[in-house]
Length: 489
Image 1: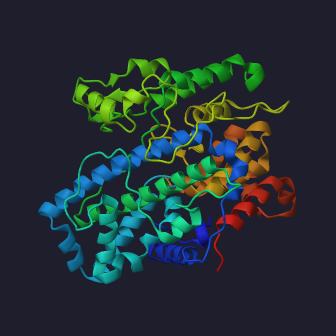
Image 2: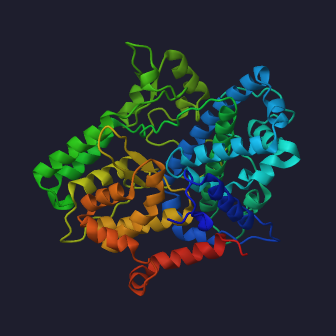
Image 3: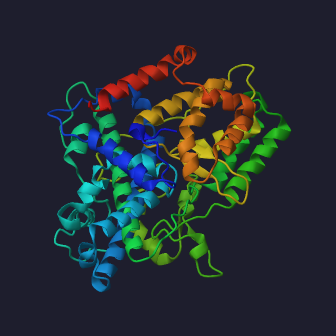
């Protein structure tokens, strides 16, 4: 399946060709232009962009980036003190540095689903940039991320806001730092600017992290931790869907099975300390997390590994927990542009089924997971002991298109929409070791489409006349986004 800009090479089987195609794409996309298209087209999608799901997703990205940059600072401080990081890097041959750069990119892009998509906003991940001045380009990027302009030991404190690396063309495409022109929705504009900036900077920081680890012969698994949503809230969502046979098209027995599936899906999810991110498996034997009782009362599970972490998060968290304790939703911190929260009746807008369409227990379970995890685009489910994986598409066009397809599919089981969803999820599934056959089996069970029929639909051209007639709204959306975001040759 094609990636961005026609990147077709397999990352694992032919990494050199894969990276060469990526560099060609980035080189074309980030050519400086005298001016860039405005962002007025985003206003059409303001209900979705300003919804609580998008804001919650962005807040999680911000916290994850702060934690990653803190860990990176600790690694760099250690290697600069005892491992002579800078001199070691500069003394390598260009060929050796290129090997480390390539491996860092391959590891970063394949770590979890959709990491590869974030690279599309990272022109700094080209060999020419990183190798410039005998390897100084890599160190310059590192120093910018950690705010160490002179190569000094970085601060290892957890920052209230992440460091965001700027790039003139990226800032131009998204008009970052410019006043909002008349006629544009400033709130929508701010949300998308922050969302894409956080995605891009997470990839840059994660790439530097993996490259340095690789330099010193180390590696660290990127753990796919299931979202730390409230277990009770998750079960409530499943019960609500399972108990209403008329609304969900389920028998009472199937409703009970949905609850059991939801319970099974969450029972193995590891929880993490809200302050230091320590996992439950890393706690000393015989100890358990401390829980915030006020947040439990509003359906949010906030846990700490000890009293010190609880006190630290209360005063200096991201945001300070005293500002959000017991409240249903936390607005992003002051370091991001001020964004109004749009209230909604639920965590996610899922259309009801059309008359005559009966949702399978597997689809009802998928809906329950999406309702409880609004920052996730879709959940790839696998049989035990393999973990489930939440896909969070980063590309704005892809995210919007997938939402249209998904809403059509859950409403009436539209076969062509499901096939297009399958094609869009294929790359993310491959990134977590899930075959397309397994992906088609999941969608087959959820939407009641025979695997053979789904396979045939997936192989047909998405641009046939029939599909174009049935997906005018998708084509219109794609045309708007292409005209506004894609750069000319």
